[in-house]
Length: 140
Image (tube, rainbow, N blue to C red):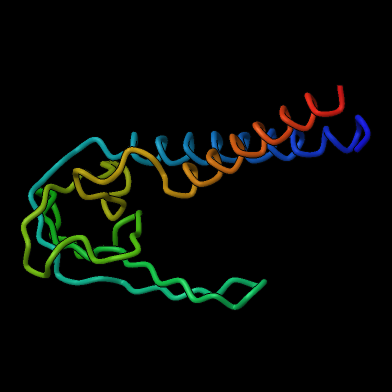
């Protein structure tokens, strides 16, 4: 393995870490805009099924559908975050944080402060970084 081949994992690590950090910043900015809160009720879920292009693996995610009253409107809306499983039961009371400039945009209090996608990208980036460093030490 020559010096340039050893650099490939470091370059890939940089890309994965950059995408992970950017994804987390976008996740937090969406969450930051939801500043008003009310009590709401989970009335169901929006189920989304997607397939990967490479191996046609099926992925199912669920976004909670909640009903809540902002004081001016009673809304039924789908949350901005989705999960691999149903976190709440239909009829369960939850605290809703919504965007006062776009009252249909909300999230349920207690949802993870870290995007799963961002955490996955950062983890891969760190592994590639370790591989790149080890490969660099190997050729010295």
